[in-house]
Image (tube, rainbow, N blue to C red; front, side, top):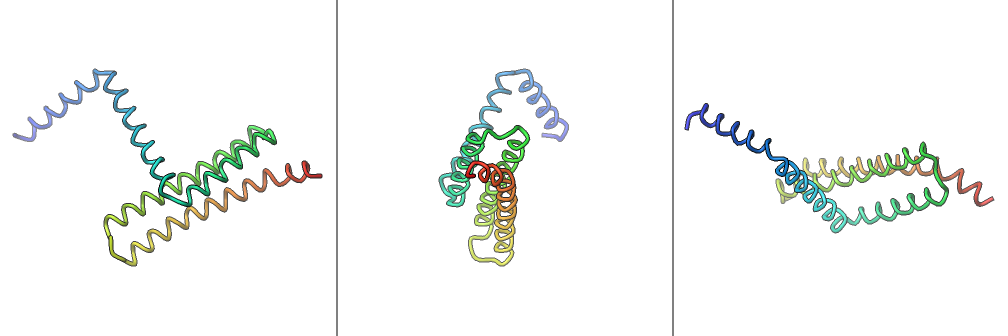
Length: 143
């Protein structure tokens, strides 16, 4: 098959797919299923994600209890999303490193350490955000 024939075949297949709105939704649904499997794997296998779940629930519960402003919720949700993103990225990077280099390699160790460091940096940022929002509220409530 010549290059032009292959290109035409691919373009025709793409045109047929674009015509089907059902295909569009089917692909989007599969994307959500794959993402859900990834989140389930993260929560099921990563012990540090259990700590993130605990603090996420604690912070959301505290926010509801203290009736945080929209402004404060923006910082809280941004912080939670960043920590969860970093944890997911770290987990995926570790899986790729384990696949590529099952035996010890110093560069793999560096990659894993740096990814774990990113989770730590964002977790400390989230803790500072949480303290800056909740400390004054807890102080006023306690007194």
